[in-house]
Image (cartoon, rainbow over all chains, first blue to last red; front, top):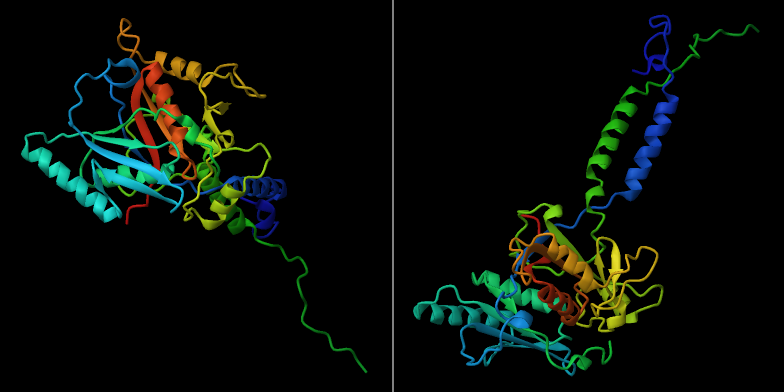
Length: 161
Length: 191
């Protein structure tokens, strides 16, 4: 490699000019260096939408509490998301996790180990708060996570950034 | 006075380029292999963090549709979003202006309402609902059941967005029969 720059010229009568090669490699290196960015490590959380409910389902006649429901509502006065598990307030993450664990234990003792969780959030709740609620559900091994249908009044969104 | 003759110096000094070329080749190889060419359809979205999300890829990119929900103001300034970027995602404020949020599928922007046709230089003339219907059609195992599709769909929503934006995408998915939804989240590298 690089005959013209190695050893004595007398050793190798055929000299190879590597300058264009080095130039091109420099350019390629520069291109890839500039376009390079470290990829964010991404994961995913499965959340199957219910097949027999929602827009294709029939209206539910008798509403029975067969799932754990997480209510989420944005409070603009305090700039925080209010969260409830069924009717119980969850002020902190620890509270929410504890309530989920209690509800899960109740359903398991009633013979329903695979209880679904339904997240019913307002449209102006931050997406990261919803994801975090899902995360806490997954921590409690609650794998069946569903999302409730949109709230009837979409005008509440866009009331101001 | 006689001039003293110094030691003779060989002026034919040559630079040995071989180690440099070797290192350049290695660098080139690293950047070429590390270049993220296969993820062109992934927009620059800052995903919300979740520590129990699965990083296992059980589907290939061809087997699922990726929907990006990202902030795009077409040159206009959004002070809320800029402040959030500066705060590094720690702010509780998010941009709730629906006009600032776009849905991107395979590099094409679609309006959020689901029925308005896409516009712009890369437009395919379809609405989000029509596009997702086409995606759903690609994997309907039961031709008699037009309401359900086995097509997987991954939603990559920006953490600075409101849930209502993602909710509209989910609602459109439900309307066209896509129920296998995966939520994209940023995760930490295993220690």
